[in-house]
Length: 293
Ligand SMILES: O=C(O)CCC(=O)C(=O)O
Ligand SMILES: [Fe+2]
Image (cartoon, helix red, strand yellow):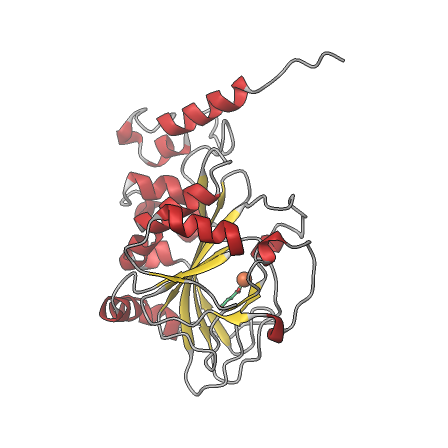
């Protein structure tokens, strides 16, 4: 079985359906190769300054550059891509809201062996979430072509439905080959890993991931995005990076204030209680039942 490719004209429903079914799907050419080169140019000062990873999981010949919301206006557009947010909202629709989890350019250098195959949701201290309960939705935007030879992400298709804490080998997985500007979507539960780079040039992708807003974010957005930059961001992006309450009360400030109000006092109370969040919370409280034991 090889990974399904959908055209850029696909819908959030189709992407979410593929994610639910087999845990991963590629959407071809979500932006042009030229537009992706412009993203790479904007990031160059940061990617040039990044060092190789400190361990076998991060990759000793792999560079990981984060803080992309603060550093790159073009990456903010990728973070806010409507198809990505739409598909994520559907995959994580059981949660009241979701948030940005991490932003990271992953540049796998020549000679890097394959990364151990894993579930990204193991980041939550290896907690075993119930089977088919997704807490995370992930993208990797191809900044170079991804080929089997240069270390395209390897995916064990369908493994989002498997038991937790399994071990897999490279041969159990398929490479998510794709062209520059295409995007690999994959769920938090699907087993996958960066491929071995047997070519003579880096394989570069931008990993942008989202999780339910009752879990901790992997990249600390409050510290990664300086307050003076945060104040200039569109409100929807501010909320997505964490300046909103998760569910009913998570992350409030002092006297039950919405964090958005603290960063943007000029908004008054307009940031409080998004309608969609309030509606979901009402639905959840309506399901509470009396225990008649
Ligand atoms: O770079 C890749 O292809 C995947 C990396 C990955 O899965 C990770 O670092 O968690
Ligand atoms: Fe991963």
